[in-house]
Image (cartoon, rainbow, N blue to C red; front, side, top):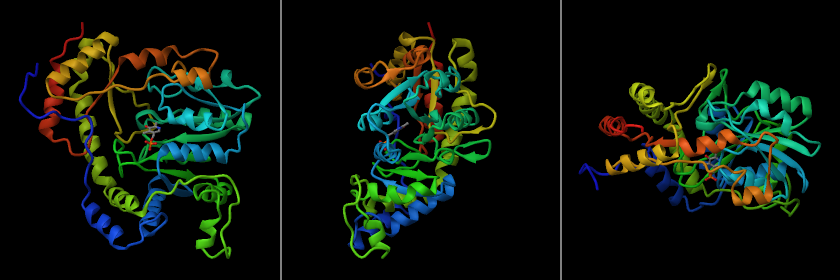
Length: 384
Ligand SMILES: *Cc1c(COP(=O)(O)O)cnc(C)c1O
């Protein structure tokens, strides 16, 4: 079946930054590995610098940061939150857990971001918030979305799992919403296996966020000696990562510049060297509108149809290249149907692109020879 004898180029492989093993050893040898230690502080500060967020709280995952956002918005069962159908299920799940109804809006055919022109029609008197996700780290139309939220008095949350280091008109992604969430899952640009963060741009949210993250207690204030004992004061859960994970994350964030330079180099080669092949075969490449600086989180191609998408993945697999697809639309997923509602226009674009999209390997440690091989393998596929 295989047509080469090289090792498979994986879809993703984690990068090990220069200080990573030393910091891990340091965290372990400190013999105090619980959350909110010195590395947690360092990682949070680095994150605040990159995103210009008012405050960054490390969490155990982006999923958990989204759950915190749902609690912080003080939503009631039956309230509605507008979000894209073309995204990771954690966004909808976090709100469904609170009895809130996710209302799924279609995506734009160019950036695959939630189509801002369709949001207004999805607003009802139960709508409380709009949650955006910057697909591939290419910003949503934040000016239009921000204005809409202001006009209707809706909260704005950014799921910025793809967008760390990206910007919209010069302003970092993650700084637009009252809250934004990050992921440090192994597949993200900066990673610690499993991890995340909640970015808080509204200072009024910080005190309650600290409590929610600490099992509903005022332990953060206790550690700062602002109260003499800590007590159960609100609902919450255990959303703090160990300082060992924060050590790994600190090293990764210190290497952010290097990681990004390498990812951008790979992204740029795919984009330039597959342009002719794409034009001849009717395969679309990513669109990056003016004013959007993306962080090379992923590289995708849009094939003409599902059959060609599946055949390209099989073709690449035979040539030892692991390519993958995502996302399965949320509005038609079993839980999406049970817990959510689809916006009036439906999600025809989401349904179509979900069938046509393929992602190529993209990680900092890809060699030039690996990239040559991937490009070659794609170019030998003929769309039919
Ligand atoms: C990866 C990802 C998540 C989930 O991140 P975890 O840290 O694994 O919970 C959520 N949303 C988007 C858009 C993602 O890409």
